[in-house]
Length: 118
Image (cartoon, rainbow, N blue to C red; front, side, top):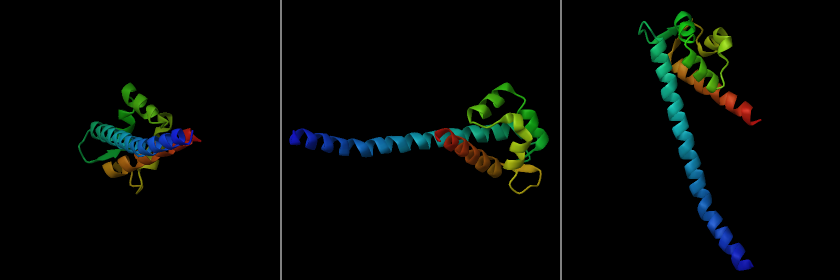
């Protein structure tokens, strides 16, 4: 029996780092995918190509069903779009830069995920 336990522990010790590595790789891929989708949303919504989103551009883009579904999939409530815009507008200048948008969305989706886990 001690030999079986020893073999089990040796095998478990070999598997654990591989599982951790696979988990980290999957998390990085999820983050990269989310980042790509958020940037795509931003560029599609930035109709005047100013490099910032106005409230009008943001509100208009959120009217598209696939965009609403995407945000809901991230755990973000688009029914509170103006509040979401204000949260993303970190410097409160009534325009959201791509950095504010990306940082804000990633932060908010992280908050939503941590709420789901609790």
